[in-house]
Amino acid sequence: MKKKIKIKINGKIIKIDEKTKLSDLVKNLKVPLKKVAIELNKEIVDKKNLNKMYLKVNDKIEIVHFIGGG
Image (cartoon, rainbow, N blue to C red; front, side, top):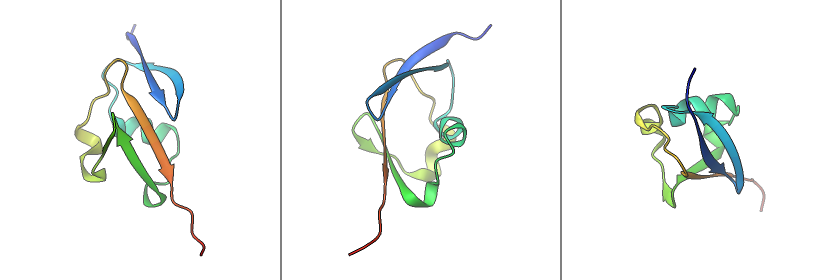
């Protein structure tokens, strides 16, 4: 059985499997990568690196959607 860890996404605490990649989380949440910015622990993430980043206990993720208009 995989160990679960707690992380926070947009202010909401969720439990995920330990050793989850940020890319897997984004896929599971069905986030449209072209329309969002992703911040991990107050740093903007380069989307090319999502597959190399493993989430850790108490990581804080903010996913911000771009909204067109003007």
